[in-house]
Every structure is written in structure tokens, then in C-alpha cells.
Length: 512
Image 1 (cartoon, one colour):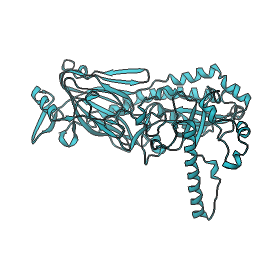
Image 2 (tube, rainbow, N blue to C red; image 1 turned 90 degrees about the vertical axis):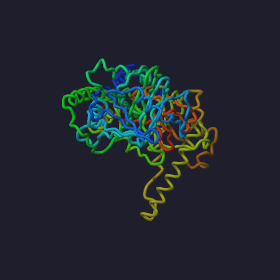
Image 3 (tube, helix red, strand yellow; image 1 turned 135 degrees about the horizontal axis):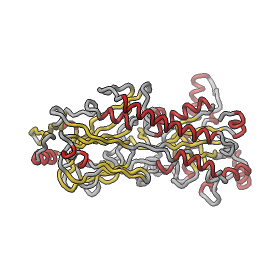
Image 4 (tube, rainbow, N blue to C red; image 1 turned 90 degrees about the horizontal axis):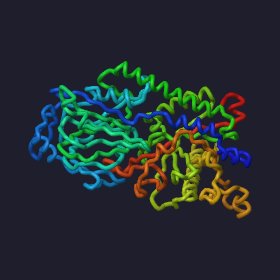
């Protein structure tokens, strides 16, 4: 834990240099791809969906989708529910559509053999040929949106800590409406499947597809006429998976060039910051909140697993930090990020996700930190017990391994006067004056926050959710409405944290 900045340093931090703001803005303006889309032709082998209709079997040939066949498919579906925390909810004011499980239909259509998976891997899935990461595509459900059907804004329910996205394939049927709208921060996109599959634009029937990251908020606008028929697939990171067709070399090289340019811009921004003596003159942290939130299992997920499943800009950031950590001699770590509110200047960096039972602690800074200190105490006792059992006695000072790092936003200042933070994180001198015997009674030092400069735009990772759906009870981008209930999987916010040496050490010696 870094020491508290003196008054001279505090004044320098609070007067954050404008040129550093300009460098940070360069980083914030980096482009980010959120989805990819396209069309592929149907063949005589892939144009049919077979399904159960009661005790009978039926099918739809999408080279000539007859109205009565589409109606039969719609009638064979069950009402589609949606996930609200751990509950499956049927509410046709929020979602009105039909759904069919994979056990009740069959098709030879496959994204892995018609080029869709290849396109997703080239356009959305960032990887190196030797990374050992590959893309797994898993069929999830069939949905039918008839007249009046819709699905209000939601993010997809995480079904695994390796899930990175969703793929929706829309079959060529005459329909109006059903536009898929995406939202991330202030940005908006739309994909009109009715136009994409219109027969007038193709000599042969084509399906349309759109693949997007699972934490991207989206909604389906009301269908006003016809039937919108879709297959939905879950996208996962998988070690050494094989895609049936070879990668398109031209597309791959084009995207590799774009990625190289992006990483060059990241490298320039970070090295410029680190070489500036006015940045954290006495040392501190650089914080890089990830541009996506990530699924985790509340019982088993380790941060190392998530680091192998990063998406989009976050993959590029990991590459750049890995490279710079060697050339500039600094260390960085992936941490779970906890904040009480988006406006709070205090952040908590943890080595694991914590799920706090509802009502167990007070939802304020004091309550959270006391809870973490209790966990830290338990952790140290467990480690010391392991030492005794293994070596016959304590072998290390476990007091230097806190379960969390607490940091304050260096651009806001140390602790804003009159704030909740000041009430809890008072100085050692103030506490000695108020309660002279606190050290002897508690046997511990008061926690002192570390200054952090946020290098990526934290506004891009804000996802507002209802209070009752947050497993931690703190300001976290957890799932509010999803396409399925989840008992153990949720979304969490993470960041890369870089330990920055003092200006005299890093600038004077040429290292950080």
C-alpha cells in the first residue's frame, strides 16, 4: 500500500495539468467495434427447419416460406420469458415473442460451414494465430416474432465465464419492423433484418446475421407485419477450437493492419503519460477500466480466466501493456473494480469478485471497507495456518497482502471536503486527536488510499441496473434484464492497474 501524499503533492495532483488531460482524451477517442453483420446465401441443404408441432412433425423451407407454415411454426413455440436476476419472468409488456428449445427443432444450417463464423472471427474476435484462443459457436434457441412482438432493452444473460457474445441469424421472410437496436454509452446503431433479407436485393434467398458482444445493450423493435424467424447462438472463447473453413487471408491481413494502427496509438498515449514528470510525481497507480463488462461465476471464476477471454479494445490494451511492461519495467494486474457510485472518487481493486449477501453490511464506504478488512483478516489467518501445517510455523508477513487496494481519483483530489470519503478516511493525525487509544485497541493501522489516474473513459463501462439485481449491493454493472434467468453467473467490472514509480525514478532513469 502506497503512503499518503504530503500536502505539496496533494496540491499538484488536484491541479491536474491540462496537457495530461489532452493525452487522456486521445486514449478515450479510440474506435471500438461492437458488432458485425452480413448476409449469406441459403442452399438446398441449409434452407429447411424441421420442428415438432404437438405430436406431429412439420417443416419450413425458407427458399419459399409459405404463410401457413410460418404460422404453424409460430404456434408451435412457447411464450418467451426473460431473466430478471435469478428469476425467469413471463411479462408480455417487456417481451412478447415465441421461443423453441433445440430439442424441438432441427436444421442443417451451420454458421461454421457457411462463412459466418469466419467473418465473426475476422471482424469481431481479436486474436493472434498463435494465441491458442478460438471461437466456439453453440446453437441456443429458435425465436419467432409475429405481428406485435418485441423485446425491450436488455443485455444477454451470461451462461459461462468464457461467453463473449451472441449471434442472431434471421431467415428470409417477408416482415416489417423487428429492427435490432444497439446502445453503448452515447452511441447508437441499428440493424434492419427485413431490408437485409429482402429478396429484391438477392437473386437467391439469403439469411442475415448480426454478431455482437454479450454485454452490449440491445432491443428488438415491434414487428408490424409478417414473421421474423431467428436462430440464436452463444459465442464462447475456446482453446484450440477449429473452424471448418480456412481464414480469408485478405480480410485477416486488413484487420491485422487496423489492429496494429490502434495499438500504436495506445502505445503512444501510454508512453507519453509515463514519461511526463507531472503525472503522479510521488508515484501511484494508472487505472484502465475495461471497455466491456465480463461474465463470471459467483462461485468459481478466477480473474486469470477472464483475462484469457477479453474482447475488442481490451485485448489490444492487454497486448500493449504486456509489451510496455517489459520495455519500461513496470508491473500491471487485472483487478475486479468496485465503486459505490459512478460519482464516487473512491475505488476498490480486488483480486477476485465478491458477492455480498443482501443486508449483510451497510451500503456505504465504511461498511464496504470493514467487510473487506474482515475478509482480509480471515485470509491472513488461513495463510498462516497453512504455513504452520506446511513449515511448522509462520514464514511470512501476511499483513502486507491486503485483499483490496483502495484508491482515490487523482484528478478529483485526495478526499473532497465534506464528502462521505472524508468522514471515513480521515488522517492518522485526526484519529489520534479524536481517539488516542485506537491503535492499541485495534492493533492495526488506518487504511490510506492510493492516488489513481484513470486512463480510459470510465463512462464507457457504465451500465445502469436496478438495485435489487446487484449481487454485491454496490455500484456494479450487473445484469438487470436478460434473455434468461441466472443463479450463479453475473457481469462484473474490471480494470488493469499499473504500478507507477515516482517521477524521479521513472523519468530520470528512463523507466516507469
